[in-house]
Length: 334
Image 1 (cartoon, rainbow, N blue to C red):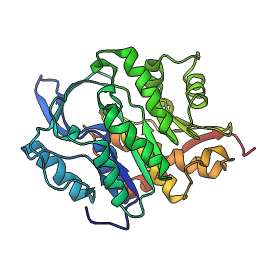
Image 2: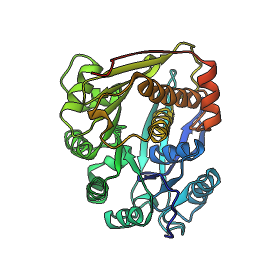
Image 3: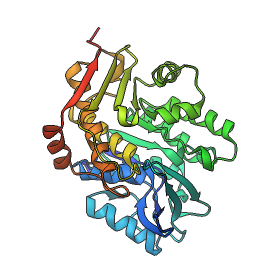
Image 4: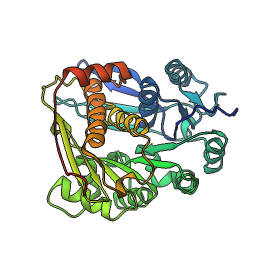
């Protein structure tokens, strides 16, 4: 891959087709996958992003690649591969919450290796930050992603991992939990939802207590916790806690991709503030924390108002920040 000096973020993980069940029982194919959504969301918010995994030469793979390229994503593997595209069958309940079934054997986005991912990042001059999570945290792919994560941390890049658990498709839930916790040890920034924390079966009577336990047991300096309609929180290793939520109710069409867009908004704000990998080990100003959470929450809100994952542009996010009030509370720097 030719060197691209403007690259800021590299992403590694699944790109697939979400077959979303409609009220009439028909399935609508939508471009998706948590890491794919995140990558597009970053690019649509004016971040120079590099997607590391291969894509298929089949029709779905060509559609996935075309949408990425149109949004400005750089492909580390521009030539398509023979393997087929991953599929996810998505049923959405009355509240807009999705349930997934995955078809992931012999697929294009898994046709990679730790060596290939590491080499692509090494060739990406100026790369500051890497992101992964979701299906990349399957124990079956440990040999692909864990050595790559270790190499990125050793290279001094900020490592962001979104737990984004998929317990319904993991045959050994105990092994899956242990592997996710092991993978999170490579993170500088962890992103989890309250549902992720419940699935990890961590000590604590509340999501906040569970999140504090997870952060304290990791090497990360920051944890971002999403709480659905209750907004989101930032916890820092320094001991600060921040909470924000929008004051205007929204109509949720579905929540597919909401967490991915949240993380994109957070990463965008992190890059804008030029935060180092260990930024949560020192006091964080309330202004910075407010900017981070506001950007992330606005990004997620715009996503849930659309069917499927339609990541907002940075202009969309800024417009929402100007028009929708945000409640914010948090710790002062110690």
